[in-house]
Length: 354
Ligand SMILES: NC(=O)c1ccc[n+]([C@@H]2O[C@H](COP(=O)([O-])OP(=O)(O)OC[C@H]3O[C@@H](n4cnc5c(N)ncnc54)[C@H](OP(=O)(O)O)[C@@H]3O)[C@@H](O)[C@H]2O)c1
Image 1 (tube, rainbow, N blue to C red):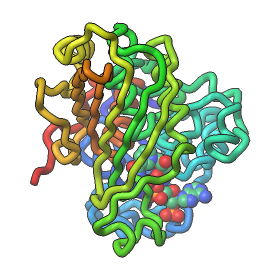
Image 2 (image 1 turned 180 degrees about the horizontal axis):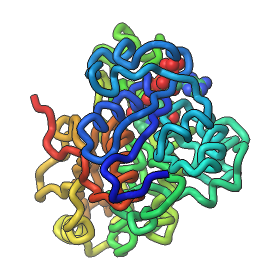
Image 3 (image 1 turned 30 degrees about the vertical axis):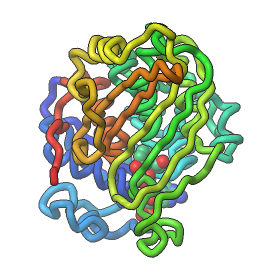
Image 4 (image 1 turned 180 degrees about the vertical axis):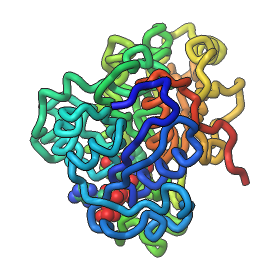
């Protein structure tokens, strides 16, 4: 395996024909130190990547052929492996890759929870529970010091990222109290992946705003666990996700019990202090509202917090691009930190607007 300091680190993207995998390849195209050398897929094996993702440059990684998910071939071709496949696939594949010395950054939920949580929240018995203790939960702004030299990174989910980043510092500082946090989540359609389905078709989603998977969404225990890891106390999360007719973007609004004498300025000062030097967290000014559109194509998360003393509630809002800070961008940020590169390398903070 090559090590940092050498100009090019080789990377495999498994699940490259999907939305998150395609976004990984798109972002890595301009990364100065990481080069995509292997793209893996399932049904698309044999095609060139640019055939299934015509927006990717065929003269760069888009010209690579999609290959089978053979761990020996992948490890032979890549120092770092990004796994962006349906839940359950990387749990089976990652141990062989790790055994061959590859670094694995998993975008699925396969290494984010304790073993006993998998049957209930993901519907499978974890096949490799020993690796769950090795995995670092890759939320760089809160756990970045654990990343240098890590072998296995569990890249956080798109909804848990803004919820944990917004609520953990406030919980730790005692500005919101342990108890129940109600989370309203909105996601664009790319959050559901590329595969066509009746529920995500244009006819079903145009003009529609609809909740789903309440109260069983798999990001619920991840939010509780992430908050406990960061703040030392685990609130109960009630999570109501909604599908909205846009392509990219996640917006979460959390309602948490407010400490009685806390003001909006207290909440925002706490967040601004914690994220002062963090390149991808934008804590908004009082009264400015988060907007997922301003994060489109970037690795940014926008955070806003408002105290409502009348109801005794802190309202904590977060917005991001589900395919970037919620998936591929955060995975690259994690890889940068694992490899000892500056965490911003290859990642943008300026959005594509309008
Ligand atoms: N979409 C998001 O916003 C988002 C955000 C955060 C995390 N994630 C996670 O990232 C992962 C990928 O999500 P996605 O939205 O990018 O999905 P997607 O668009 O549906 O793509 C899935 C990818 O996995 C491959 N695949 C399908 N079935 C497979 C199997 N049985 N074994 C191995 N590979 C298989 C597909 O290959 P073929 O096309 O060749 O069949 C495709 O490359 C999921 O675990 C998801 O939860 C997604």
